[in-house]
Image 1 (tube, rainbow, N blue to C red):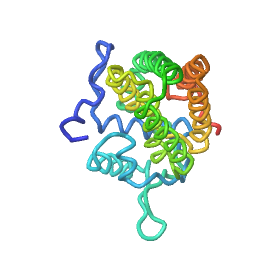
Image 2: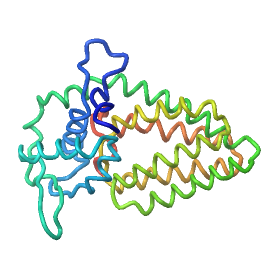
Image 3: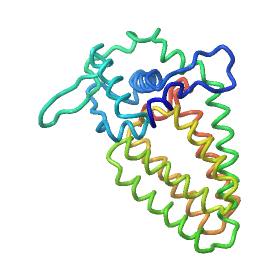
Length: 254
């Protein structure tokens, strides 16, 4: 994403009177919320900058700017040399940023996030059912092969940033397997907007969610349209319990 495209990354939405969030604000909020909710632990190392920037859909320059500010504030720690990288400071007290404008701006968008989850649950359940109920031609078979590869890539993921790449690939492949090319742009629009609100999760929790991916794909391959739809819908609606909008996200204890 370019700097220009990032400026008002969370500017649009149905909420009147809500201050637009720049990409810098959004990255800051996502890191702070992940620490506050216990999804990133004190002393935990963050993924390499390149993969983190890709997972958060921002430029490397923006990510480094935010991480530099957070390091100056004692929230992150930068270590050099072998075993170096960027770490969550230990100890750390989330009360120090409870009035942070970026975090407050993110929380103000709770109703937008809930709407996006509902929209994604609707379209992904429909696309999964269509993928299960249609005759498999060459293009659809390739899409299912891509979904299966994404499952394995997720298993091999070393951290949440790598898992994010595999997660996006899986859901896009399932959508493509429906054969409804006209619906893919709308699916991408909804999914991409929702991805902009994701915060880092423990890799153990994400691997549990990959088991749900496996069940979705199995239902599709068995031609079980109803099972595929129900599993896909439940998988997406789980976000209401695992994202920052929940009082205690499910990912916290895993």
